[in-house]
Length: 136
Image (cartoon, rainbow, N blue to C red; front, side, top):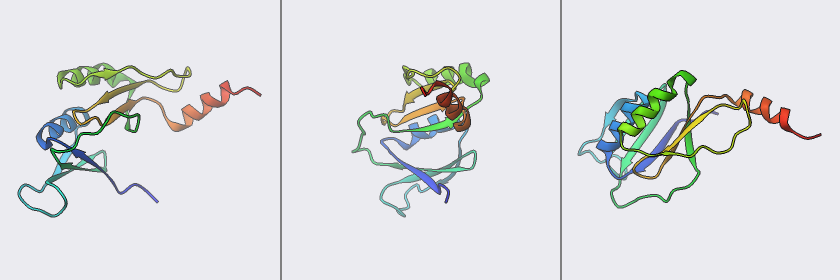
């Protein structure tokens, strides 16, 4: 089984579109405009083959939590992505404590309080470094 798509509810489709295109080089593949095929106006994007659906409901704003979506990035992209995040007026959050070698992360909330993580490590690397720190 694999993930089909992820859907996020946002307050402003245009603002979210700018963020997705600027940070993730998302390709917009559908815009419902005035059509009503779902609960709310929506857009579909592809981010490296991942289908991301974004629906606009101006009445909702989520509380900030640690629930998040993480995207793998190359370490050489960190400075450029930090510049782009700040250019969108978004605040970079403090990283959590990490075990040496598990990778670096950039955390930020979008304007709707969805938490995104841009992470340089892999699952295999993380598990390897966790095993190295386990006490026997």
